[in-house]
Image 1 (spheres, protein in one colour):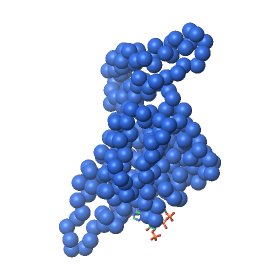
Image 2 (cartoon, rainbow, N blue to C red; image 1 turned 180 degrees about the horizontal axis):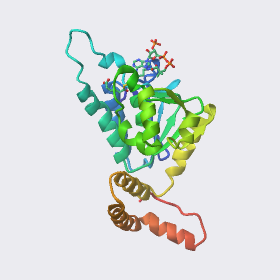
Image 3 (cartoon, protein in one colour; image 1 turned 135 degrees about the vertical axis):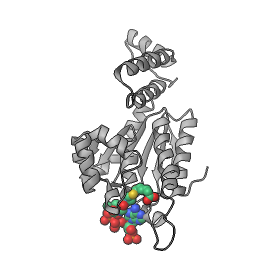
Image 4 (cartoon, rainbow, N blue to C red; image 1 turned 180 degrees about the vertical axis):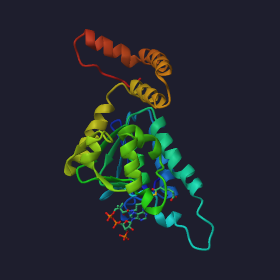
Amino acid sequence: MPYEYILYDAARGVATITLNRPDVLNAFTMPMAVELQGGLRAAAEDDSVRAVLLTGAGRAFCAGQDLSEAAPTDGTPAPPIAEIVRRTYNPSVRAIRAIEKPVVCAVNGVAAGAGANLALACDVVLAADTASFVQAFSKIGLIPDTGGTFFLPRLVGLARATAMAFFGDKVSAADAQAMGMIYRVVESARLLDEARAIAARLATQPTRGFGLTKRAFNQSLANDLDAQLEVEAELQAEAAATADFAEGVRAFLEKRQPSFAGR
Ligand code: T3D
């Protein structure tokens, strides 16, 4: 599928999706979101893809909603914000959480509004030491969306999430790592190489097992302990039925490195 607002490249087990509207810091329009969702679908359906890498072109990761698309104009009806959220952001977050392959996010610069929360929905988030995260919504009178009210308090606690949402201040990548909001900060010049190496490494691992792990974590966000223990029993049975489990145990007993096929 030809893309206009993202770049999509699948090679050696990794699908790389690059948000590509650098002149406006990769701000989201609905067409870009539709393409992002298409890219994630392509990665999900391609069995040769075993990890996804999401990043942004140019100096920013993503500045959130393109405000020229959603701007209220005096005297005209309010823009259909609920529809924008339902069609732009909600399916994008759902697609990231639903794809049963690891999604690595390389936050290459500022991540603001929906851009910040899109990153937080990913599985492994790396950020350049020059990157920052801004819950910019309050600056324009909105509330955090794109899963922000779900992921942010779970990642950093309610007190910090509330302060970030109310103040809308820039949080540095170093502070984001220190408070557990992201996995790791990387020197800017090395970010893409490091993210590619991590995605490539994940692409050689037990993909089905990762998918089931992700499903279990997704469910844990809403379950109590008893329900979650049952989820683990059921999904462990699925993991144990994979060829990768058999290969992992065989390799251990034969004292060699496993060769996982992702099945
Ligand atoms: O539909 C709905 O509204 C509901 C959904 C909401 C979801 C959201 O994401 S709401 C939050 C929207 N995002 C923002 O409010 C962030 C706006 N941008 C900024 O605050 C700043 O640009 C940044 C902090 C991200 C970066 O600042 P800085 O100084 O590094 O860059 P800049 O000079 O402000 O921006 C560079 C260019 O990108 C500039 O264009 P120009 O002057 O070079 O022609 C700027 O207008 C453009 N740009 C940046 N962000 C957006 C944008 N254009 C459209 N929409 C943007 N969000």
